[in-house]
Image (cartoon, rainbow, N blue to C red; front, top):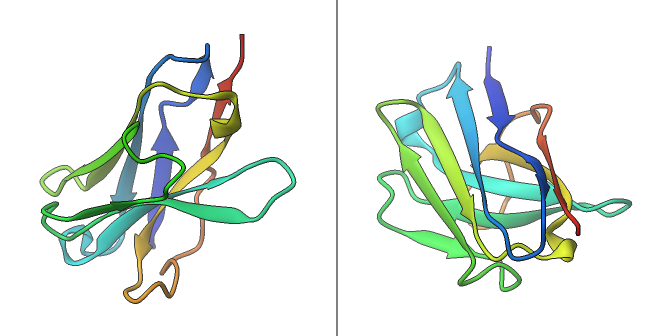
Length: 120
């Protein structure tokens, strides 16, 4: 059974940093590209960042380029999202998932996500 467990969210002031983690199980983690998505209040879930299978290639939404860094540890079946210089518009629930190629979206059902709130 696939499990995706996100953690590391919280309340942070604008300009602050957070590091999100996603522990994956139930599938061969090192065979899949992995992504972070987020859902802003009242909006659809959007793709934030993707990391390739061995971590040698990454892609980011324009809104987070230069501020967020996605990485993975295949030995720990974990994907991370380092978020710096956070802005109020980054407030959302953040989710991870295995990523289908060619922009076809996620493979699996969603985990519970982790709430990130950026506010002074």
